[in-house]
Length: 253
Image 1: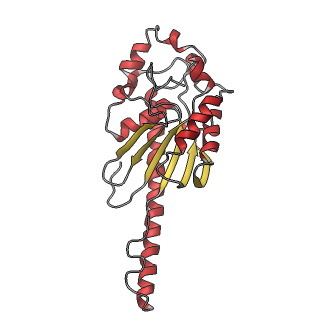
Image 2 (image 1 turned 60 degrees about the horizontal axis):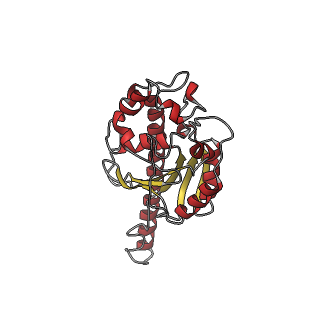
Image 3 (image 1 turned 60 degrees about the vertical axis):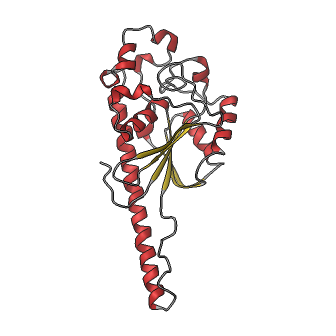
């Protein structure tokens, strides 16, 4: 899927900041009315000051409120060519589990499947983890393909400019390196969705993705330059911590 010769997109995955559901220990899922807390906003702002890039081609975010709020805050710390809602990166549909307390869910028979055999788990009345992983990974694949096309167009334009400069006696080195042609994009999403994308990038079986922890308000960087993706940073926060007492990285919310 990721075969590439010289295209160089980089994707920053930003998990929404600490939310009211995170602090309450609730599995929010797609329930409405879940917003960032004041502490979550402050922590997110501190982390966004650490971004490795200040200009991005695109910003895509889950349509849920906590991700829309996170995307708006991110826009104060970086420039984005375009911003759009992306359903591919919406939270898992936890069905009948939505709104329940995590401390209650961990006592259910299904929890072992969630923790140990994620690829086999379908939430009652909701989505399977495998389905969510498939749509998220496909969303990233489509985004990477779009960025690679933009990079190719930039290279062709740089080459044409260099050739024209050479004809005019302006020096054959003009545009030789093409400047910084890498396209960066940011995806604002949820813990399990980001973990599924990371697992795919690392070639990790979905059944093992609960070994990953992605903190609220953290960012992860995946470089899609070569034949396989390379994760260059994971779950970065200003606090330097990825607090997680349960699968999901800070709570499945």
